[in-house]
Length: 547
Image (cartoon, rainbow, N blue to C red; front, side):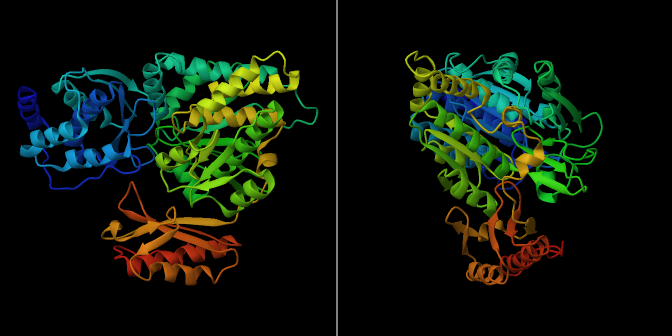
């Protein structure tokens, strides 16, 4: 142990903590300007190795800043089942990233002692990265950390974040979940997609067209989408724009841009009622959009995807005759119209969780089939062990009526189409396309299920975003004193008004969400709430401007 700690301190000289800048492991790991991350990545290599030794399993380390600007980077650690890092270890990550270099050995000792780390076990860490220019350098720092404490790395190079989550789950399930290669990933998802497409009976009134334009955010998702096309046959034709050959990562494109700005990405021309989709930089989010016959822009965000998926699964569960508890998990960002539609029309239970996939994921585990999506387009479906067992048994039960057995068999195949480890833009895109083909819908048919309340999001720069604390799944501001009352008073001025504020988990800003009966009113409410935040929570720079 002492020899290892000496090596840690010596190697740390290559990756010194050169600035007294505190960094915190947030809802999506560490994320900040890339030049501040070298020492963090070295130390997270060490932490990933300790986590691997503790769990006696392979851990993942994904180097990405997702939808953030290209100048940023970050890291997410992945636990053995492909899920996000356990919350108690997030504190270890923050602690280890911020200690001064001289105290690094004692910090490691503290974690080893507290977690009873089995230091005699050889650690294994899977590493992957996105396309940022800083990613290779940071990957080398992370791998150095792993190797300094005696661990081994498997470097997958360029992957989407969901692909690495998938690899980690595969290897730790001894191949039961799938083959831990990129080829295995594509084969599993697309074999399920093509099988389900082949079984479809085309509706006489179908308006669905198997063509899609994809905005790949100039990120790693573009490379993978080109590979995906080779597996889809005639079932789906994907035209790719913002593929990284020109343009900047996430700049004026990608899922976050389309969602927040509520307009199409640069380089994407919307044709009447033609489907367009946008990934984010690491391809774990997806949103759809289209222009109607009058040229008006329509956004199909995570709420729209969630309701489509929940309705489809509900039908299959009903046809199968199985008694399974289906539920949908949203965040406070979910549009009020979507929640009403899910509750009143689909009759599916809705739960609300704090922002961040890890919170939705854990809440979704409470259901046999848990559908979870953030409005930003990040989500998936979880099948409990009980649900998987019942579905597989019914699919093989020759005593059941054909309709029930066939529905169960479809659910079995749908399970293979869905990446249950985390939100996955590629998997979600294939699922949406399958459902639309099943229903014979074009995107305007999907959109007409319910009409979103007009909404607006904006960001307010403040001196310290932690002065805002929240409760009630982030829907209520506890501090600063008086802020929630100010929000309530502003909301009361507008028909169908709703607004909340929360400190960002990934940026030094406070996020404001507002919705109302008209876009003009939603914009006004967002600006007024933004000004309240600016005035009461230490705003800096220019105050929020009218939209």
